[in-house]
Length: 131
Image (tube, rainbow, N blue to C red; front, side, top):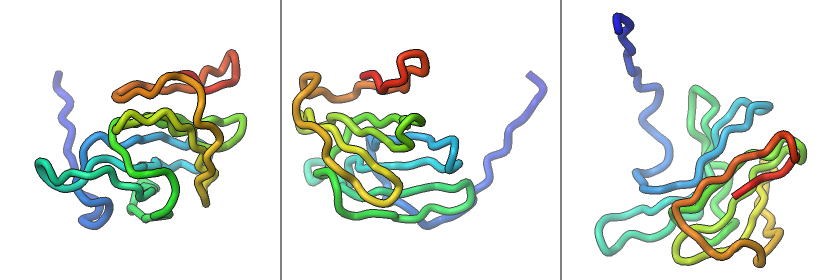
């Protein structure tokens, strides 16, 4: 391969270092949304509950309240309803939340069994988010 890629740091402020956040991309708003993840070190790690957005140039914290803090959850963008759907995460969560770009709303606490380290995707044929 003759092409070379060069990484360029765009910003040095944004979310604190974290493990296993939920991420999703909004093609309409052209932004990445990050929720939660584990912050801290070793046994003092906790699930964060902040929501951040990246627009290609800068990180902005857009919410610090919403779903309980967690890591290893999954999130997908639903273009039909123009929202992000968050499901599951550690510790053993099975709740479902929706981010509309300005606030989180819990839409379910029953559904698939609680899980961690799973994936979610929007199924365009059936027009629904699938875990």
